Length: 165
Image 1 (cartoon, rainbow, N blue to C red):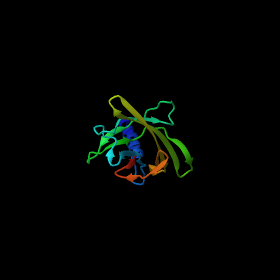
Image 2 (cartoon, rainbow, N blue to C red):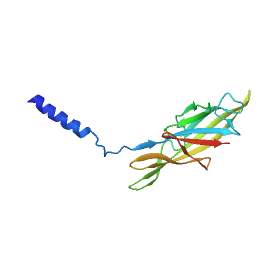
Image 3 (cartoon, helix red, strand yellow):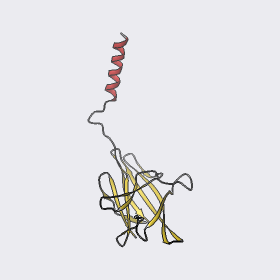
Image 4 (cartoon, one colour):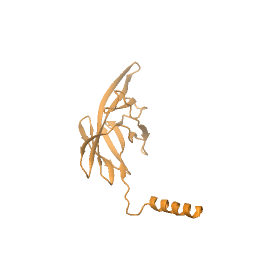
């Protein structure tokens, strides 16, 4: 009798936990690949003269003054370097209704550039990201770099951003 009741409970739990084909899964598109160049020169390639030698990202809306944001420096098939930002900056809600919500993150960049053997200069920039949430998708909606809108190029569940300085 114990085995039969256990089997019935197990079958009910298994049935209740299975998804039907009508259940929807929210798609998440929030990965940014950020390319930065100047006159065609890859500023993220540390081997090149005038390129950035250090990169720091800080969450402007973070709970502390210093709230580092995680990122990866990667290289594509064409050997161009880019910053891969997945998530990590705090998102604040800027608009909401029953069908959708808008969020915003703001990241402060600090790029160090070596001028000569004894001199470094730091370049400060700001990236603002707006996200759109609906029941079916959470995605990057708009991006601004230093207050200027940036074109988003969708590619395989990520967005490419090209910044020219």
